[in-house]
Amino acid sequence: MPFLDLEAGYAELQPELDDAARRVMATGRYVLGPETAAFEHAFGEACGTRHAVGVASGLDAVSLALRALGIGLGDEVLVPGHAPISTWLAVTAAGAKPVPAEPDPQTGNLDPVSAAERLGPRTRAIVAVHLYGQAMDVEPLRRFNLPIVEDAAHAPLAKIGGRLAGSLGDIAAFSFGPAQNLGAIGDAGAVTTDDTALADAVRRLRDLGASEPHRHDILGVSSRLDELQAALLRVKLAHLPDWNRRRHALAVRYWNGLMGIQDLQLPRVAPGSEPVWHQFVVRHPRRDELAEHLDRAGVETDIQWAEPPHLSGAYENAGIRTGELPRTEAWARECLSLPIGPHMTTAQADAVIAAVRSFGGAAQQRDLRLVG
Image (cartoon, rainbow, N blue to C red; front, side, top):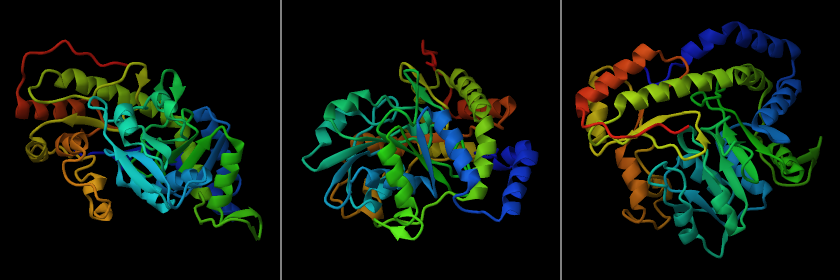
């Protein structure tokens, strides 16, 4: 059983995707053309923002969002300790230093209390990652009077308090890597914001710092969403609400089927949250044994993320020692992503449930319910 079946996604939409690809190839216009403009308009509307700017990757989206805010060398940016290393690398690419805070013990999203403890005189922004498809409530972060950058790669169309991910902070970054809920056929990303000045800054930065053809006013990069990816993403965007609903149905099935297994911690959904279930992440003190058991049963799983960024070789000079972020490290030791995706069948989900239950055994069921 694959962790995620990308081929099935193409098979479902093959006529539409093939038509879009042929349309682009026939134009001879492959970068920053009408397809990119059309996708940017559609994605901005979907996220409830005035602007969306296509870029080449999710890492670039975070980095350019920070640069648009004027953040660079000598600045510090608060980041979640439990997060993809790409979020940290984006801060570093902007010239700033990532400073990690601990995750909420229930959801895994950034804990505002820990964030308050990690702020310093050089902190210039906070990156809030909407982890596993559950939007974080950023309102408790506003009391710090710092720009809030959403890393919404996992959470297109997720909501918290009725508001959409991508419209919650000052500026937001999305990844459209192939495994995301809205995935390109390769790498791609976007930045969303209601701030026209920030959107214009990202547009200049992504295109070699150009304010107009052959006029380069700032040090930019080459990070442009190409026409082919934009056209394919616009096809998939129309199907994203339905694909997210399928993920939700599987998450509810998992939650009900796995409830009450001893030592297995199921995902927690914050009040008012409407996740899009990019991942269904469970925690278990014998995570590696559970993963091996599922592998023998033919169930492919994944770990998000076995090596916390602060313990990686990339940040070994950051001066953060093992044990300084105990909650982050506990998530890294215990979390396991079960297969989930819009093309997974209920029979496959039931097979995963059976395989997990055969490892853990059932304890007395507790009065727990999926929220949202």
